[in-house]
Length: 330
Image (cartoon, rainbow, N blue to C red; front, top):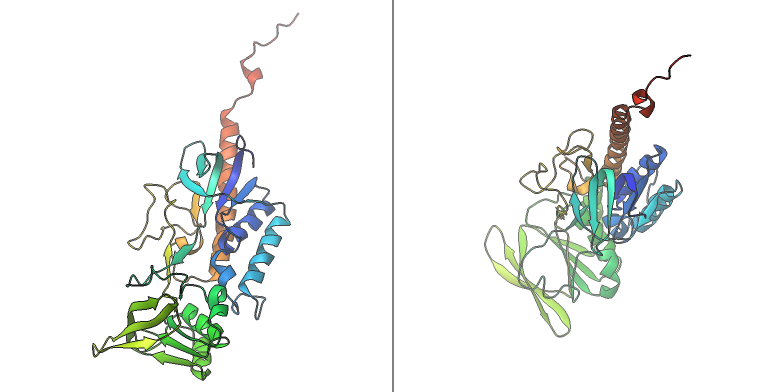
């Protein structure tokens, strides 16, 4: 990555949206760099099984991440491991600053940083993270083989992770604050058919308890009756959604009340040449295939933007010989 070069496109984030954007940008012959601080794939790498991505009836999230990354790099896409600390918009180009003090410039930028797990913000959650509290069953499930675990949430992620944990743990409790799961019907059917899973309806976790050996119980509260009780458990897995990683969003960018960036149909923000894809973008559904589609859209739009920008710049640069005196004829 040359700091002196100006890139046509810089992609910040290597999840499905960023990798898809990289594929389409390279096919459009854009001089492109993708910047990802961690492993390409984002949250997708932590999914044990992906069953709704077209073309794959079932594939591991890490494997799908690898395939997307390899696909993008097969076109020559440069992927660099750097921490971005600031994105500064400009009229001529946009500037991206890194934690080590370096920087690059780009005509267009696609922001694809994804999100981070939403916290319950209850006593014991932060204190015992890594000591029985987890946000990734695939990462930590092995440590709870033949133990009792609690899964908090009621959406697709909670159902998928509970099913994964049921293959390892001896008992899985799903704690859900409502009287019906929000997960897809196929996932719900699998959850209800699994004898190791019990759903605790209309219930919330109010505290996580631990000792020197780790988590040993959670405090529960019935949302309808107000009754409270303690449930013995060896681990707590929290899947209640994600918060958008909007720290790099430039000042003046339009966002909604929840912190998601508002874009047009091209995934472009109100700042020309800056696009947002994936879980950071305001939209109806948050799925791998939707993020990948965002990446495609933004890369194609960025290609048009860069092409028009360069054409306009060239039109403004008149040939030098127009200003030379016409030679005299003998």
